[in-house]
Length: 82
Ligand SMILES: [Zn+2]
Image (cartoon, rainbow, N blue to C red):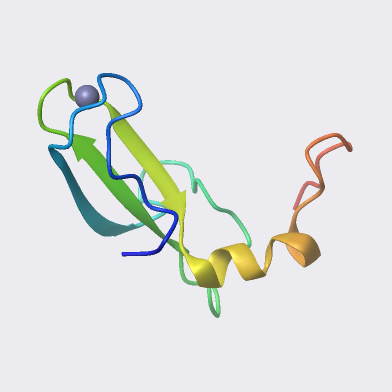
């Protein structure tokens, strides 16, 4: 759990949030955090689900965020492609 993780649901304000860590890319789906993993592995992210309304929130983990400035473009610039 990181300091910036939510304590309430953004949708319904419930405190019944549950969190876990998962990989940011699956074998058959797109990578949600491309180029931020370690040695070719997928990056990790934290996922939170609201028990009351089902709203889902994702957060890139600290290691992935530390690579953003070198690996991704700022949001207002054209995207880099791999
Ligand atoms: Zn909710």
